[in-house]
Amino acid sequence: MTGAVPNPAEVFAAVAVVLAAAVATAAARTRDPVRQAVVLSALGLVLSVLFLLVQAPDVALSQLAVGSAITPLLILLTVRAIRRRAAQQTGRKPEGGKGSGGGG
Image 1 (spheres, rainbow, N blue to C red):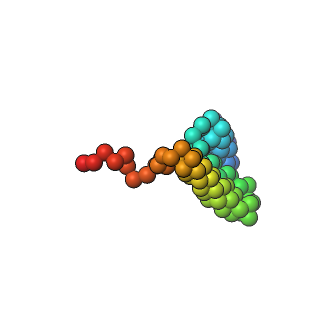
Image 2 (image 1 turned 135 degrees about the vertical axis):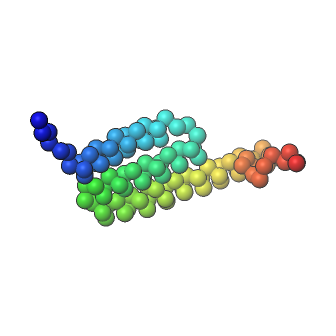
Image 3 (image 1 turned 60 degrees about the vertical axis):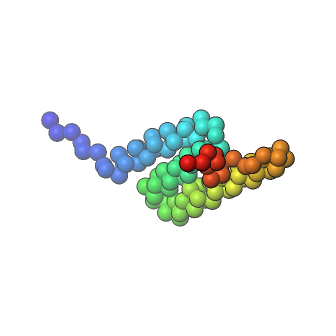
């Protein structure tokens, strides 16, 4: 009994589609904006690979630049600015500084 050997490119594409669906679901379920930016960056990378597999290198390059780098960076900068502004309005120090000042 000899079965048909699956094409490795098709197997890799199927794995990439499943991985993209899983990462997209994780991005939708993540509530923290900073973590969501990281997950969106991973989704951009997975989609870039998927676009390469379907022979769309120009789209893959655009997705890599926009989806994996620029959009997450803009999200992180926006969250930082919002947290800074909120901290200034309440008179507190912004979160995420260099430690909690606990000494050592």
